[in-house]
Amino acid sequence: MGAKNMVAGIIAEYNPFHNGHLHQINKLREKLGESCTIIACISGGLTQRGELPVLSKWQRGALAVENGVNLVLELPAVFTSRSAQHFAFGGVSLFHKLGVVNHLIFSCAHPDLPLLNKIAGFDLANYKNELQTKLKEGFSYASAAAELMAQNIGTEAAILHDPNTILAIEYLKAIKQLNSTIQPLAMQRTGSHHNDHKANGQFASGRAIRNMLQKNCLDELKLVLPSTTCAMLTKEPSITFDMHQLYPALQLMLMTSSPEQLRKIDSMSEGLEYKLIEAANASSMTEFINTLVSKRYQRTRISRLILHLLLNLTNDITTEADQIGSPYARVLAFDNKGRELIKKLKKVSTIPLITKVSEHINRRDLINKHLAGPLEHILYYDIIAQNIYELCQKSPVPNHDFLASPIYIQR
Image (tube, rainbow, N blue to C red; front, top):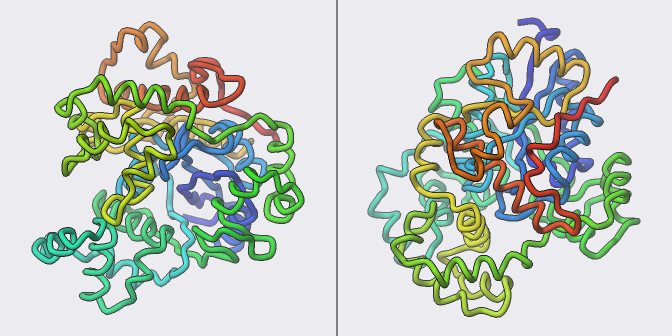
């Protein structure tokens, strides 16, 4: 396929869209050509770290298109609110089913594709006893797995603790699992590492930028964000990405649920349901989380579990999602080139493109939980995830998914 017809996919959160994301897009076009079409698949109302995004999914989608992406799709919440393995599988399965994506682009601190493929091919199932030993020693599952892989592959464990490298490995696993023809393209992450708390010149991690936002460091933000992102953040001074006001609802749920009911929630294991019920006596969300965090249960896992509780995301739903992958492609934003691609996707994609939620779930269905099949089951959680986001805003728009349309940016 010529460069003119090349389609590249990026799985991201754009929380918010920053100079590092813009740099990746520019480098991608340098490598694959200016005529390359770029699709981004981003998280919706909730993020993979178990937090609220800084801006809504439509705003983040629009920013991506304004800065060079041609089409932005939503990654279903049943994948975004879970571990790297499920986040990656959801995104790769979506791109795979579109039938047009040639390359999957990702940036990480260690873009050594042969090494990443070697790690991706490592089978932890052959090391069950060693893994259990490390878990009993108090290691988290991720840390125990990283140590075992590093020892047996002959690399540094630190590589396997970098969040973007972990995602890169999971992307490669998903491509192999789906027997996809999508070609991975690893790029060097520039300027700032994923969890850095400070800026490095014109680059800063998403975490550092969110810290700047909380401290209202506008001059620092201007250095690390495209002007379009700065303008949107300035226009939306009432944005909040704090879920603490939902703590009473979480407390009530835990106080009125039995351990048996809680065990149906995804990621609830190892007796965590009892720890959660006990921790619900905490006076704030911060105290609640701090009570539960340990060497075994990392903060991100607890934050995701809170989302699963608020979503009522049960094991049967995540099992269904893991079996079928992303069952639709929800359009958030696009430009002229993206519009042409949408026309093509309607002909070749094996999953439907969604521009109106009401074509699959209406408000009555939402109230009565009349969900016809897997597509509706999974789409339902996108709506609930967006409602969680909205309820934490100063001017919430409940059931916003029924009101919003994809954003078209002409250029």
